[in-house]
Length: 440
Ligand code: GDP
Image (cartoon, rainbow, N blue to C red; front, side, top):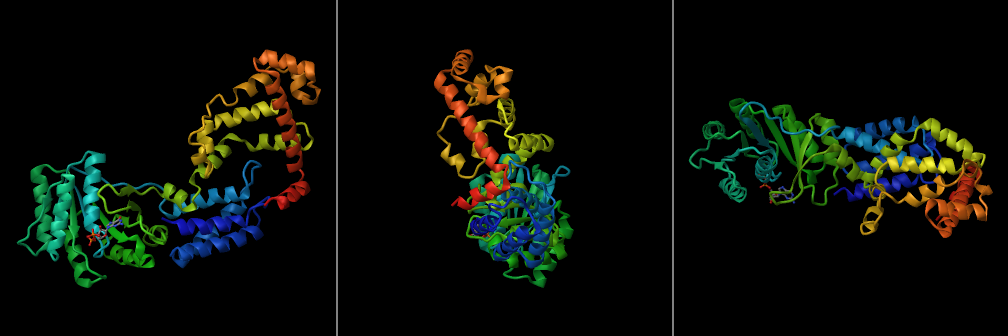
């Protein structure tokens, strides 16, 4: 799902690659690309425009920390805004009183009956509830059969009345039966139509009035793109539903519906369907969906952790030192401590897209820095501040003192010197630009 959108956003970000800061000019170009990507994914125009305007404003105001590239920073801003666009926080079923009544609405083929079964199964297995399913689609005998088969599969009772053609009476009977049998949730599947139809709307309004549901969930096929949003609007105007369910997100959907529904009808998406099986139901998490859309979810957490750990004043001090080539072993040591505070090394590496898979079988313990720390701790204050002063006899002493060996000490000092060289270059904008140009 969303592969196309992710790819396009990825390309849009490339415009920012190699840029030192986020400016009006480079961000305008990127926003144009992002808006195009969103429109292609079937997000409606108004939503896409409001979204990119918002992201642009937020991105330009941000200070770019040395440890984060503008592209990564923009990813973070995009992630926050996408999350907000899709509702911000996770929204679950509201359980109130001894019996929670849930009415399922939507067009034919949207996946109402399938979702009714999935929801019953979810509430039973994950929430410890005792649901009753009610077959309210009186026009299609096959729909009643389908619900009974599903109920049998997941071990949930189904109330049906094949003699009746009155969906309002059936809904009432279902609720009465649930009370009588001691069920604490009743899920009423209703009849749909192929398209919006006045008779259907009136009927479901009457069912709503008759049973006064706690939740009305509007089920919509995500593959129908813009139509999904239009249908949602009509249903919401009539029913004032409490949440939407997007089905068939496992298919080749462009995902625009997920991005537009909340902003158009101002109702949360509560669940997503990701397959035909009864288990293929997910609670909808706006933040995780945003990460998935961006195709780089874990970098977001990485950037967040970096932002938490690195304070800007310290970063500025450090930059000054680097520029003067005064970065020493004390600074190096404190950098290691900061990285360690960000979390387990393997977890951190796993947050970099692609690296997680690569690192699957590699052992990186929490003591990855143990020897480096020991070596630095065995240096005298003078040596820490003056790495150039560490001659051969000092190296021998440090190796002995740290319980390592001379090869390790030599390697660390060599790496440190190389690092200082690179840092010096990076702190010089002209040299940096030169280096970037030479990159593939
Ligand atoms: P209803 O007319 O709204 O009750 O729709 P159904 O529940 O009968 O579903 C219509 C078709 O969509 C059926 O073939 C379902 O198996 C299929 N379906 C429902 N939800 C999903 C889903 O999340 N993913 C996929 N791939 N198929 C689904």
